[in-house]
Image (cartoon, rainbow, N blue to C red):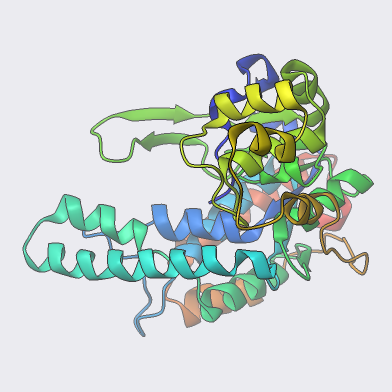
Length: 344
């Protein structure tokens, strides 16, 4: 879910940009974050995800293929970074999420059986989860598309931030702000959900645009250091601790600016956490990442993609061909290039 600090991020620190502005730039994408978006958003009228004739979920494959093609046509260079084993401190959060999804799945089936379709849609999204098939099939498709896939040893966002900090990527791409805590110099949000989107639980729509946040500019405008941004998050609550009850982002910012650290703020409040703040701080400052990765963009295996999507998962051959042809035409238009390796 990520740390909830959106309300203290000044609008002056958030740059609205177009996808075209990211052309030619490598973006290290939090793969799990994007997969959750696709299996949550891409669903039928009754809330069920897209499936093939064998009942296997294909919402994620649809999103990855068609939306990634759109990014490639603009010259954006995606790098997909997958989560590994979560830190031990995250276990309680993971278990809690699994319990919430199981309850949402039960409520979904009940609402569906009673004809409460709008409620069913809501619960279906809350019940969305990743399984081994979704993860492995997405990796396979991305590989066939010639795109770099990196397996992180632990948190995918930490690995993506590491790539950006090293200069192997221009920015991290995620909806969560944790990338900034992990030290990514730039965070791009909304890269895979651009367009008109329905507001949760309301009959209203908004136009979603990509956002670019520079870490150094954010810290300067807030008047704090990165370590203090982490401490602020600790007070609010992260995936590794619940935080202090009743302390929201604005209060946490005031406390950190007044007292300087999470420990001193907690002492002033007369509160304590179940986890040592230093332990959480260390996860963000010194995350488990790997230097053993290779980044390259190769030519798409067109026939391999079609076999997987059309033959195995019942995608429309006409739609897949159309998307592949549009990408080919975009590459040829750009200085006569014919493959992704030339393009990048």
